[in-house]
View 1 (tube, rainbow, N blue to C red):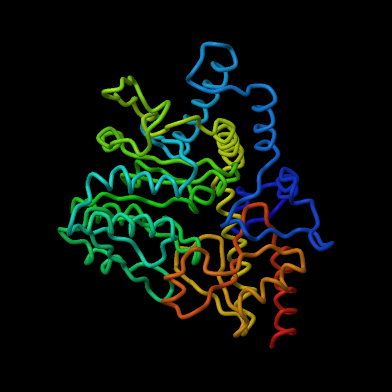
View 2: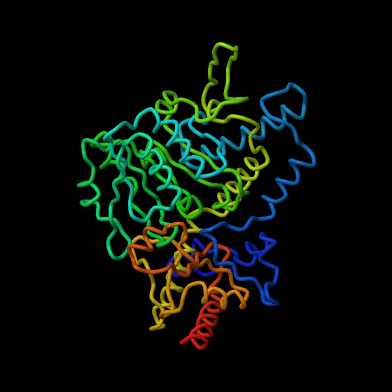
Length: 415
């Protein structure tokens, strides 16, 4: 049973939880795997893997397209998964939950559908300097096509956003604020509810990139008040290739579809097409049914454990790792926002992150090296990238100790 200082009621059986994840028992380079690349993708519990197998071995059928038993069964399970997502983010209705291939496609959907109809010449789109490329490039592309302007809010030295500066950049020309909930590079947790309120006071539509948040925090889209919230299943212990978009019903209803084809139509003639109702008008083609079911199974799994317990243990891991890293004068932590998720980006002296990561890998430890799809941020910091160790609730303090042993070896070899 793991111990959480000051929170004995939030303890859980870490050994039992680790046994739920088959990959954690394997070896890499003849050493037990330590997986610290959770911000890139999380590992999958057996229940999610079993769900995928069970779908294809016993239920495989297209949805919404047949009256036979398998089709009805698959449709019921698929829509049941949508309801699980709705409940998890506290949307008002399943009509507000659109399944996509992931967070990136969800952002592109908004850029093309909402943006194509609402962004015009001279308008402005506001983002922050810590955005992932997925919440930057689509807006650049939209601005180029619509002759709009992309405004970037700088961040403070610790990686947090000065809300006064952000509010000062909101002008009468600002049509959209697109901002991350949690930075995938620095771990900064943005006060998205307060930010949304500031934007709405000026009539600005708000999109929150929630890719990094759903596995760490309780997400309540109605409490946040945002107009759009995007997410990916593989970041929250579900399968790859599935994710989604939350959007307020009135806004989604007014939006034109992003893609055309089957499923998103109500009636088709050679002269005219009538689009389907929400959420289906944004889900052209055969959906990733198995992925949706796996997503639902992942949400069930972490809900049973409890996000309060997950968050408490991850915060303890962050505290412990920060303490260990800070004791080494050669380690420089990049990003020290007061509100931070369970990841640490760091550098070791003047060693290139790639070189350090290659040595760390030989210890069976998976960390991420590079710019983490935040190249403009790295350019502004004047560094080639960082080493990123991102923690999940199945990680242990002993694994952090192993990472420190690997870092000492890196220092011995290069410094």
